[in-house]
Image (cartoon, rainbow, N blue to C red; front, side):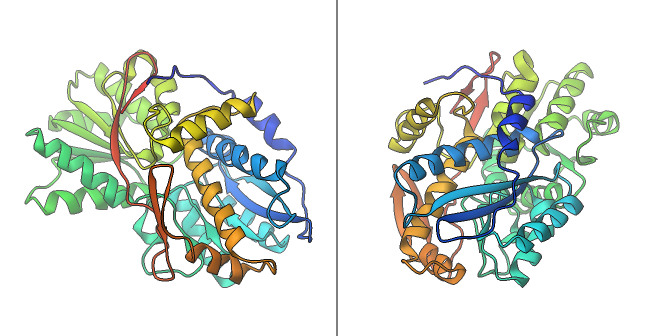
Length: 377
């Protein structure tokens, strides 16, 4: 099934979020979650869409009386996808006594926040990142919903090499996120006795890709694996094609699939993106039907895409953990509740948490953009 792309304006998103930027102390009637994410800037759609998906589910739960008669609220702070701002926001949220941190967007920002959360023993749930640096060593307070970048890049390299495409270049963001993805590509290639033919970087929140395009196009790769956000990846694809590059482009899920499709339009045809969530565009899984129906019922604002699907599933797992935490809700009981989820299927999407494993899923599949803004899986 195909769903046409729908643009969601930053203005509308900012207006929608404005009502949630109010300091609210914990109480017996509320469960307040803290989220620092990009709601403005070149990565804004990632924060907006994840939040939208989570809110769809939390609103459903609240309409039924919440969890243990407590309503769930999210307090949002905008970090613009910058680590220093994220760290400042995290300190504020912890000082405001939010119950848990939820839905942080990005590797460099999450790496800045997790030590602060760990020090204060605040659960850090469902960061939108697959970096191994947040998963190893094991952290009692960190819970990951999505597969790792090693899982994603491993599948990408497997796909490319199975097609006989072994000259692989990497375009990556010059920070912890880009390097995490690069490490994954290198790990997968080295297991096959291969190396990248070229590497080039772009700065975070920048679309200055001229040097990277020159470097990588000159190497003549069969494919370019991209480890960055949608604005810079779109800029690279456009400029590389202008420079005569005729190979293929592969992206990891953090790029923001719908945002990338919106940026590229017709130029998106044939661009591949690895996905760590079940497709909202394919009704085969019950979770996809449930999610699309929930988005439709929510009305104006929300839209069904991979990023909002991740927010929705993350919210479902968090609520499951809250319900299992028992009537005397504490941060420690929430951790025990999440660990008690065990292995189960969320409408055809397998997840598992335990006391020794805080990574819910290793699911990865590949999707392709079409020239009319749609996504084929």
